[in-house]
Length: 211
Image (cartoon, rainbow, N blue to C red; front, side):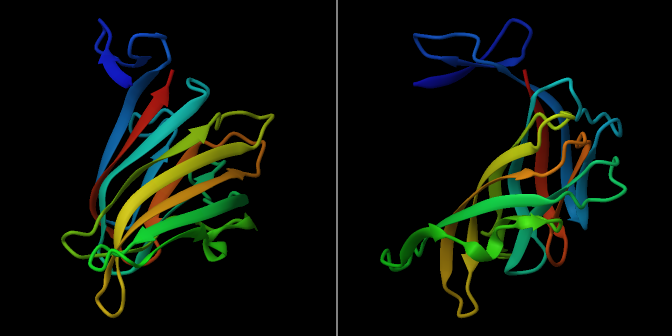
């Protein structure tokens, strides 16, 4: 059983109950609250953002990301020039699990070839067809590993959960699993989140360093 405890400095520390201690700390860096935002960007050195060699791993959490348009994609891209361009080439894999609660019989788990990238420089989708219903929102996380490395490519993994509403009005619960790498040995110093159409109507994105 895993627990998260506060140490005597008030820093969140991941420990294993009754066994190993010192498994790492999540250091809060920045929270951005979207409000009809076209993009949400975290740029190293700007607005108290740290995205450099201070930490070897960074965690972004998504809390109730709500789009302004129905059936739109939540996505991200990376930059190596402090946000002047978000166009890092990426190779990714994309798995999807879904379930239709109303019938409890329409469900699937499979690889989605339409949402992966093969050295594509465009944005990588993290959640597809997110609903704009009041009940619709997306939550999850993205891990970015060693973005400041000038030796290795930049690996990442993400998992998100959200509601999708089909054109016929049927509601589905989706869980998407994405992994891949940014194919650059330059330091990644900025990351940007957006919707493929419309705005991020509401929601919080938080950045942590993993110590």
